[in-house]
Image (tube, rainbow, N blue to C red):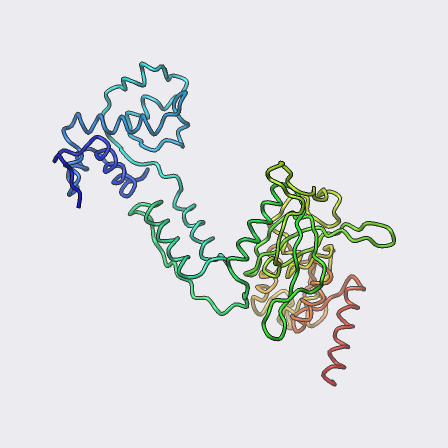
Length: 399
């Protein structure tokens, strides 16, 4: 094994060792002084004399906190200590001449710490995103989380349980194919061009097979993660009675194969076929809203409307204002806080009347799912669709 030719560490090694220690052992709430650092086993040999350590830290700060034409913004600094903040904290008073930078002032090293790129909250967001990713297997997930914790955090980072017990999910698609699909679609969205693909379904042999011979061509707008799957909000133009219909459609990305960007030629600078403009697509949100799914249950794509429901909510017989239990959790699970309580019936059983904004198609199926707790009142056509489904179920099961 190769060894150092001299017992004295080089300037580069000295800077590297100090920097690595600061990354792992300091943050804005846990600063360090030169005296404290000298008490750390194994660090003294890299610090040298007081003046050597001082010069090393100051030069590191000058190198990492300055850009070509002056000091960086305060939140982009990497090596921070009190005297440096006092000297360079106010950009308006900084003289960034070459002479000033070549001869940095003598500073005391107090309150020394490394300014990390990500806050602990942001680290938690990154880890959460990895944990819930459907394109990563368990081994890769654990490796990525370990690298994040070892390279982007300190010993003060509050590590929590990073393994979540999951149940078997019906995601049979190859993770590599799904990841490639997502990258290709995102490229098309960024370039505002169309994509083509084959849309598939599973047969009785658990094989993914095309639903039709023709490839689908759509204009893509948003990739949405919902209930463990990725969806694409897009527009597929349909010609009917010599008129082109431009409605929003929603596609499961895990059921797509052979995703391509037609007419793309990077050599000639051709990005592809321009997509349909957002404002000309019926029912497509012009700007993405995080409450989209609250009105498009199970990613239904028809236009949401106002729907009035009766909710079973038991009350005391002698006092209809006194509720017997907390029973609106299922409403919050599906609609968040977007539903509106209107009133309570004046007669027994004193059920509640509420209003939601929801896709009619989704509501029909949802109302059947919660038929023991929900009744659709208005609009009449949505209520009638529920009745039709109930009659079909009666005929099917011979009730």
